[in-house]
Each structure stands twice: as C-alpha cells, then as structure tokens.
Length: 580
Image (cartoon, rainbow, N blue to C red; front, side, top):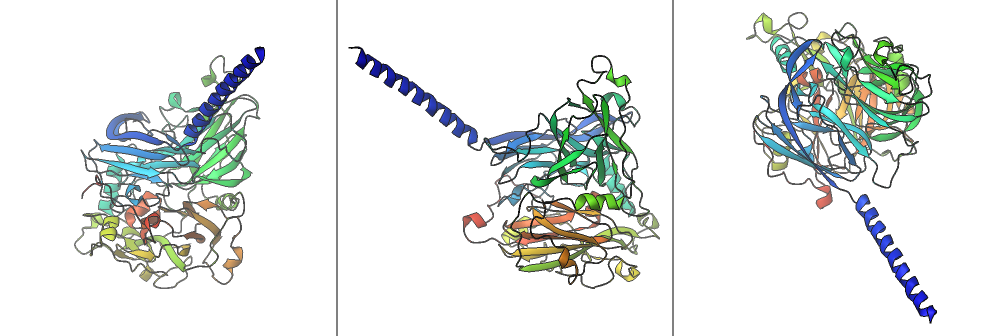
C-alpha cells in the first residue's frame, strides 16, 4: 500500500523541481534579454567652485562631470535631453556605432539641429556588439568642457570579460578646467583670429588635485587593497590636450581601448588623445600606502602654448598604516612623468596595441583615400580691423583636410539635407587626394598655407571597403591630431613618420591583428592608415578631436548610401528631431 504513496511523493517532488527549474530558466532568460535604459538629462547652469573661484558651469543634472551610464551589450538607451541653459546644445555618444540611427549621433548641424534653450530631444539607440569604455559629451561649441560623462558597456548577462575578473572597477575622466566661461574663451578666439587661451587646470573626475590651489581637500581617492586586481577605465575628456597618464609604482596592463578588447600588454604610462579611452588592470602588489595617479600634457606642437600643470588623484590602500588615523597627513608617492614632448614614449605605447586574435581586415579595397590634416593661416580680410587678425603676422588661424576648411551649415543639418535631397547645403566633391602634392612634413611654401572654405563630403557606396591615409602636415606647426570618425570603428593598420610612401610603407601594414579604435592619434609629422567597411548608412563626421581645430575647420563628412532592404537603410528621422 505504501508504493503508490511513494510514487505520488516522487512525482510531486519532480513537479516541484521542474517548476523551480522553469523559474530559474525564465529568470536566466529575463536576465539575458536586453533591456531599455531610460534617462533624463537636464542641461543647466550650476555654480561650481574650482581653483579658489566659483563660477556658473553648464552641467547635466547639476553634476560635474555628468552622470555615468552603465549598460550591457545589446541594451537600448533612451535619453531625454532638456535644455535649460542659455546656449544651444547637442549630445554625442562617442564611439557608439549608431547602426541606422544616425539621428541620435549628436554633432550640431551634422546629424541634427541643436536643442535650443527651452527645447528637448530624446536620443534613442541600441548597443550592438560593443563592450568596454565609451563616453558621452556635448557636441556644440565648447560646451563639452563641462558637459560630459562615462558610458560603460558591460558584457551581456552571462558573458564575462576576457581577462581576470576585477575585484572593483573605477572610471577616471580626465578633463580640462578654465577659470572662465569656456564659451567666452572660444568666442574671443573666433573674434580675434588668435589661438584660444589655454586651460588653467586638468582634472580627474572634475577635481584638479593636490598640486593646485584650494584643491587638496577634494582630491579624488581611489581605493585598492593588497592582493586585489582592479579595472581602471581611463577617458581623455580634455578639450584640447593629449595627456600622459600614470600611477606611481604600479604597472598598467592594457586590456581594452575605445570599447574594443586588446591583446594585453603592460606599460607604466598611457597616452590618450582627447576622445580616446583605455582600460587597464592594476594589481595591489605594492606596500600599503598612498600613491599619486597623475596626468599631464603630451605637447607635440613645437612652440605652441599649452597648460603645463599636472592633475592628481590618490590610489589609497585600505590597509595603509594611515588608514585608521589620518591619511591626509601622509604624502603620496609621486610618479615620474614623461617629458611634455616625449614622442618616442607615445610611439612605443601606440605600437603596442593589437587585437586579441586574428581579425578580418579588408584586403581588397574599393576606396583608397589620402587626407592631409593640419593647420593654416588665413590672410586678414580687407573689411576686418587689425584686432580681428591677431594670429601670426596679422593673420587668422584656420585648419583643413585636403586643403578644405570645413564650414558647418546653420539652418539645417547635413543629414536632413542628405536624406531629403535638399540642394545647396553641402557638396560631395571633397577631394579623394590632396589637390596638390607637396612635401607634407617638410618646409611648406607659404602659398599653401591658406585653405579653401567649404561644406564638403565624400560619398561611399554601402559595403565599400575603405582605406584612408591620414597625413599630418607641417603647415604652421606639425602636431599629433586625434582623428575621430563618427558611426564607425576602424582598424589602425600602420603608423609612421614623415610622408607616407605607398610603395615602401605598405610593408608596415598589420593585416593580421591590428587594433580596432574610433579615434586615432595621427603621429606628429607623420601618418596613420585606417581601414573599415562602410556598413552604416548616414552622414558621418570625421574630425580632429582637439576642439580648437574643429572650430578652425579640421573636419569633413563621409556620406554612406543606403544598401538593400530595411537592415541596410537609415531609419526615418524621429518625430521630435529639433528644428533649426
């Protein structure tokens, strides 16, 4: 008589176990499913005190830097931006591919008209196949001096990092601070034609650090404990300055950059151009104490003024002898930093980047482009007074790509004009090669120092395999230029110095495991070669990420046609796209 009872009990038990299994399975599926993150950004003026002085800074939600967004690969992001400041604004999601969603990319008058004071716009986009550290920032005038924040993309639920799981993660945003309104700084430079005033401080997460006046009590503390392996995400959000970064007595193992994993390599110093990100692992393998985290300028342009100060944070061991008492009294260890013009260190660092494994680099090319990048000087227009031409020898500073100095429209966005076929806004005759060949890094004739203004782009067919040689010039001064391409990642297959030689320099091409980036630091007096497949339709800005150079015209647009079918076609513009 007992047997049936046991059978019933067993079946009941099995049913419960099966139910629990289903519950866990559905939970796991729920966890693995992409989710939509809703955020609200309010752009507003906020009193901020730095370097002994309080001033109104433009912020997001009253925060400087702005809020960090954390998502998973595959998630969708929806951010409603309301502009309560006195300036036009847009937000760019730096490094996000924006597959078919160019309307959410953000550069002012390129993919959208600005959000006017009192207006709002909702950015909507999905993360597709990207993991690591990116960031967001204003893309309107110089507002990104204070309007920026981190955008962290974690692996999909259930996936893991391709390196040791860190005990803790810290994001460090390197920035620049002016004891003035940055908008006034750039407006004054535009009025005079001279270079803008350099910044008064660099910052780490908005704080200048111990080496500046009135800054010590707010210096950022980064915790670590003995034996830990921690992940530090470094973002160069500075407006105009490439920066060296180091941590006293600690080695940095680079594991990612621009939201792409890298083959791990160890270094003691990083160099990041504005716009670039680098993920590093550090080990808590030093004596428990306090160690400075420090950043200062890499100044590659000879004789150009720059901010020569040093920003610091403090790596503090929780088991440091002072931890139980007063750590502020113990002086942290200061790391050595490279000389301001230490290009060999930059070159060694840059040449260390590789993809983790063999990658599919385009080998057959449909487009082989050659773009010169650099500065220039415009002669003083006849109707200008001398005070409006305060550049060298009574000129006005300018910049260009292939001798075209980019001019933004002001009554419609380029993407709207492109999508709707509106004439007279831009032309598609951006030159595939320099209009005139010359000794780019030599002594350039003064007759070549004045570029031609224009709103010019270059058309690419969907799916075309593209190579672009980016060649620095020594017009006025050579410089390391961080060149950023919106809407794309690209492989950096080679870098070098001097003039690119298509016959001999191809032997340097890495077509096996080149790094995948969204911003390339083109060497001073040198060149870089990038490749990508044009698989994202839209109008995509390519520009120098030194904001002073964008203002002067160091930019152009790549127009990528729609392909075949819905998945190769741009989405229609959203209903709330701002009007000009």
